[in-house]
Image (cartoon, rainbow, N blue to C red; front, side, top):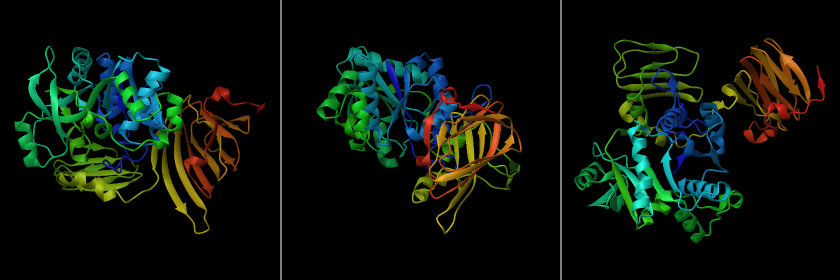
Length: 456
């Protein structure tokens, strides 16, 4: 069995910590069993290793999240990268094309798809292993996992099964699906033994390849990449699952939680305060998460979340926190904090002047031994001021060494890169007509591949 973990999301529901580049699964607000900060994706990846599934797992993601995944999981996590975001059916079809065409897996290989961020214990992954057996022992085309509900929730979709078990398995035939009912409807569904749809399902590779061929979707990986923009934006549930007559579900009666809102996330945080600030002792059920270097003081507040990041400040009652997505839906701005494979950066200031000139100031950390790509820009110049640490830089194929206090000027069109000898921090001031990621022309990624004309 191969696992595909879907890593997407636009980062609205846990704003301001989450953004288009740092979705909820990357927020390091949980703790591992040693008390170390941990994100949801790091937790799930660790659990997969512990249950023997890590060696068969892939992450399906989009380009904007690649750097963050590499930063948090390292380079060992296999990635299948969407050219652009197009919902879960195109993403899963791309993964199937990769496994069929590039990996040359047999058509009877079971592929299990799951979200990258379920908050579960390891029994959840042991149950996932049973989906492969169910597909081999029944004639079903799809095997889903459904969570036994604990309350009549309006937040989840429901799977309504038959009462008859498939012989020799725990699987039940699926009768129908019900998407996000009212609380009253949910109570009726639970009386019918309905299960929460937790987004976990399995199929044979050959099954999805046939579906793709029937829909005229390329099954060769490179051709799929070239035509990816033509695929309809639609979920796998709507395009495949709810249309499949031969579908079974395996109940999971164990711990499962969706940490998709501030109120559910803070329930699982080991600390009520992260970052600089004061929360007075008369505060009750109140969490402060502060990513800035300025103190935040919270006095006498009950049942609240105060979240502070370079992207903004949120103050909300916990019960109202799910409204953040609708409130922020009309607001679009560039991410102010990102993690990269080499380190991280935080936007300190951004100004757009009337004469079409923009100035963006970043504080950048490059970890020891890491380097940014060898690159150039056509629409901006940069000035780097080294704050701490020692690094090598290459400017137009010439090597220099820099230390605290040194200033490096990088005009438009200048090829440049930096490699940290120790952890190095510097202030970068960008100035130009269009300060966007699309103006980065990457010549090469690895330091060893950069041509050197002269050592100075």
